[in-house]
Image (cartoon, rainbow, N blue to C red; front, side, top):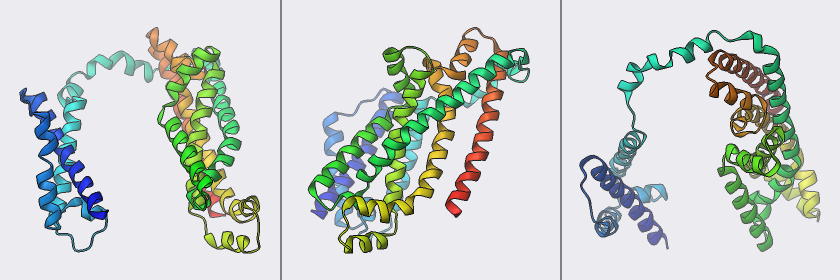
Length: 322
């Protein structure tokens, strides 16, 4: 089984590198490599390296006494990936330095904000802060309860526990992988344009993100108290209440405050698709090319994010240290 796993990893590694080379040849030189060759060719280097105990797969799996050739293999893959990224992203340093004049009006507006719009923009900013706060507060109870079922050390002792772990982890991963702006588009259609749609988008994303943070904290707790409580014949809920909860409350509070900090920043983005708050105002001003108003919004957002960052960092430090 171990040899099969090693072979599959090494084959996949070389398949990736050959596919990258084929794509670069097609993109840069209009040269094509047959698909069959791409699928079959990686078998040879994989077999050769595994047989000589010099493969990267063996190093990854912790095989002892692996020859150092794996370093060249890994280095070449990293270099190839960087070249692929450079070509795909179409990096153009010359355009970056020579076309800066196109942003003259934007930069002028940013550094000369229109303070006459201060009051309505502050109102939109307050809406953003409370939008993020409500999304965070409503996400806490759901994430708190579900995080226990998403912790491997608590759920892998029985078949139903394993099923619950896999289901909750999978759903939370899927929901977390969908960006908040996509959720905002869905909820804008569902409940209409406004801060409620933005709050729902951040709420969904916050639950899935906090489940991951909370459950990983549970998986890192000291197992001693858990075993001691179990030895007394305590039920599962009693174990969670008296052995797990006391060890995780302070980190949970720290993670929650950090999530509120993130939601304030994300609330600006969801506003672009009708999620309310100052993001919606930013989108409207940008569409009208009112760069001085855009500059005012950017400075206000930066100020609030800075204050939130300092505040949340201080609170997290105190909670974790205590």
